Length: 309
Image (cartoon, rainbow, N blue to C red; front, side, top):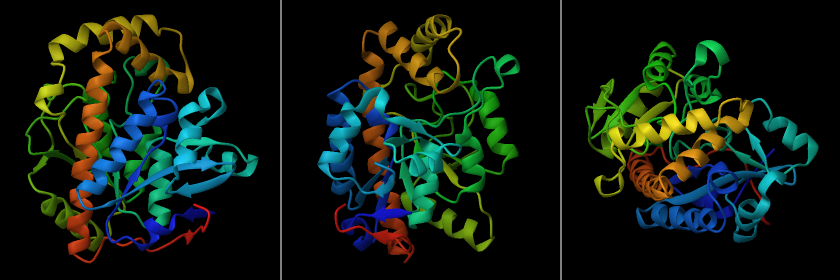
């Protein structure tokens, strides 16, 4: 079911990486350049990167250069996979890029405890009419993985997203901050429910969660670096314009359409901010993975190695 690259299997500290950011989140070749830079950032911080995707019906944990290139150039031929269609892609022999939810599933099955992404999905604005709530929230409630992100995507209804996470019993940690970050912005105007300041503190929280038998994941909300943020008062008009432009878009196209519209409205500035925050999250995730390894909890423990990974 899961093919784990030998380097990932042998590592003590591993960081899972999603692949939707490669296949659907950025234009080529910036997507490929960013994927490589994220892997380098994880390595520099002492951990091994494990990008995850479905390639020809095989769930791969750890991708070679050819597979990354395939995803980056794949366009519409690469499915966007969440919990509902991950098994379908395997059964159909498809190529697929994993969202936060699908990456968490694969990481947990492979025994990887830490996952770095850009921003999680959540409750969309106008949910009373659309009922559009990301599967990421349910996955955080049921799958024990530490997810490092720059909060939730700012295009979402952030207060409702935090309410759902609280209801689902997901610890939401402001890393080094008392405010919940909003993806491109360091502040959302909302308090972070909890705060921790060191990777070792997150590792200890993980141990306490497991000791109590709690099955939820942990969301570590890591603010974008100050030098790259787009303040909330600047990004909100762009988001409003994007919401209007994307009106009528449905299903899995909603988030990509909104991000594309924000990119246009900000003259490309949102893309540069996105790259900076992903790199920042990758570094922190690697530091947490190293801290877990120091506690004897970092090694990959399941799945099987694939000699051609």
